Every structure is written in structure tokens, then in C-alpha cells.
Image (cartoon, rainbow, N blue to C red; front, side, top):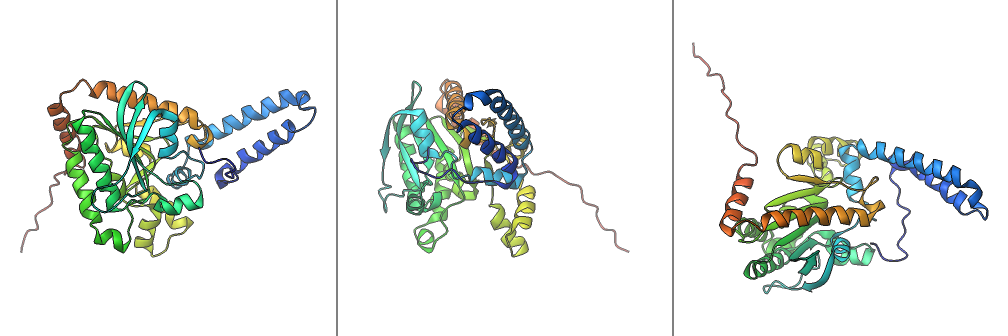
Length: 333
């Protein structure tokens, strides 16, 4: 969770009615004789929960993007802390340096020893800047691949937690081979001889997400997004301006929600979040995430390495099949 003292006063406009009820509940609970209002408080809570359920059952794609970016939404570090025992972080790529936007380390989920790799965003301003807001440099992807190879050597499964608006687009990262580093990860992850489980926990932006996103099982949390580009980036390209209207249209057309990605075969499962999103109940969100990961690892651990590699290749090779269309042949004269 965010550090102590972090302000929770972030409001989403489509939650205004819920937040008003929260204020009414807080006002009643703060009274010295709050016990007299127990039935009224409970009624307000029931109304709030029902309203929250209706709102989150019908989020628009752009609203989903905003929920995925909520400042109180758990990040990789939060899930690792709540989900793992004995987490030991590993650093460096043995080429250039250590990228703080990617965290890697050995850990234990339940009874399973795993290699955990995730994007790190940071909660406070200083941490966000240090981690480049979750946008990894090539040394981050090379670090991730080095640790994946280490996991393969010791026959440990790999779990990746994806949460990035995209790979870092700066001149330095391009000079050090950003595109090559991501492409190399796609190649090498496709043939790792150990189980690989990937989960988009927040933002899944373009190659930045794919750089640690090739797995035997790929899932999304219910209110995450996964797309070739962010809505703002798409809007800026198509309409030369990113605003509320163009972002809303772009988010809809990109089919970036978990339901869209499941429908189109880009992910294998949707992991449910607590009512109102993972930021409202991180512990429950972690329990759902952990349960899904352990179920997948139990199934994948029974497969031979050759079978894992073959099925993983077939899985990604089948995405986006070409559809043959018969075009009319023009007749001359």
C-alpha cells in the first residue's frame, strides 16, 4: 500500500455520488453518540455498495483507464509484499546498470518458490521520478531477461506483474537499444524451459508491457487495460489533440479493457477485483491474484519443458490470424 500519510483524496468524477455517501457515513461515525445512528449508517453503506457495484459493472473504456491509474491502486511492489515471503531483490543487467523501473527477485508465493518480475511505478513523487513512472529503459528489460534465465537454470517458475504506460521513449534509451532489448525478450521468453505466468495488474502499454509479457498464461485484473498504445497517444496521432473527448473515443476504439482482450484471445483470464476496484481493498485483490497464480503454476508444473515451449509458441502464433477475403476481380472492357 502507499506510504503512511499518503493522501487518499483523489476523486473520480463518475464516483461523485459514492463519495458523497462516504462523507455522510464519516460524519455520522464521527459523532459522540454514533451508536444511535447504527441503522442509518448501515443503510447508507448498503446503498453505497450497491451504487458502487452498478458503476463498476458499467465502466466505459476511458473510465477503466482512469481506474487503472488511480494513485491508491496497488503496484507490483505492493502485491509482492502482500503476497510473498522471503522476497530477495536482484539488481543489474551486467551491461549498463540497474533500472529501478523493473523489480526482479526470488520469492515464495504460498509454497511455491518463484522468480518475480514487475514494473515499479512508485507512489510518492520522488519515487515516481526515480522509477520513470514505470517506464523501463533497455537495461530494465535486460535485467529482467537475465533473471528469467537464472530462474530457468534453477527450474523455477516465473511470475511477471505488468504495469506500465510504455517503455521509456528518451534518446538515451534509444541509443542503448530499447527496441532490440524488448525484441530480444520476446524471443527468449517464447522459448524459456520453465513455466511463465504474466498478469497485467494496471496499465499494459505497448512494447513496454510485452517486454515481460510472453507467458504460458496471461491474465488481466478486471479493471486493468492492455493495448498497443495509450488512449492519449492514439488521440494525439489521429486528432492532433488529446482531450476528454478524443481520449474517450480512442479508448473505446482500441478495445483495451480486460473483457475486450479476453474476447479477442489476447489474454487467457480476467482476475476479479473487489467492488470498486483494487484500490479500495488491496488485500482482497491480492488474495484473488495469488489464488489465480497458484492455480496456473500447479497446472503448468505438470508439463514437460518441451511441451511448455511448444504450447507457448502455438498460443502466441495463433493470435491475430489472417482472414482470407475474396475480392472481386475487375473485368476490363
